[in-house]
Amino acid sequence: MNSTDQEVTSIFKETNALLTGHFILRSGLRSGHFFQCAQVCQHLDKVTRLAELLVAKIEHLKPTTIVSPAMGGLVIGQEVARQMKCRYLFLEKEEDLLVMRRNFDLSPEDRVLIVEDVVTRGGRVQEALAIVRKYPSILCGVACLVDRSKGDLDFQTPFQPLLKMNFPTYSPDDLPDELQDIPPVKPGS
Image (cartoon, rainbow, N blue to C red; front, side, top):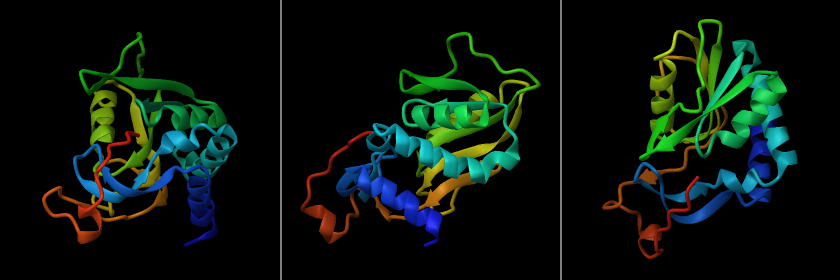
């Protein structure tokens, strides 16, 4: 683990954003670990530092507009946009699907970077990409704080996580012994 990974992991642990137990992920899969990014987002000094570290990895993409899906990506997306001096838009949930509302719009001059908190299977990112691709803007990539995908994702655009953590995930009907006796919880992002 390099020094950046160590610092990021330490921030998540200090703020109780990295949890252990038996968790139901948004994907329906189960895990013994969960990133509760809302916990770290209570500490704006920590959010500032995480964004600084992420910006160092994505500044070469030269975005002009940051787009984040609700809810998880809102705080980190806004801070990345602030640090990069970009315009910031967010996508909202409407009947559990992401939509762009509030008269937000993208033009051909916009270089869009999608910023999310945690990516496991990439569902919300795929929804965000589908929305952004409806506009004549330039998609320059996707960034996130934590990539749990095990490298299985292809967004067909550059993808830059701050930290890769590959905790195992399980189908609910194929749980390991250590999770079977723990009641599952769905803490949300």
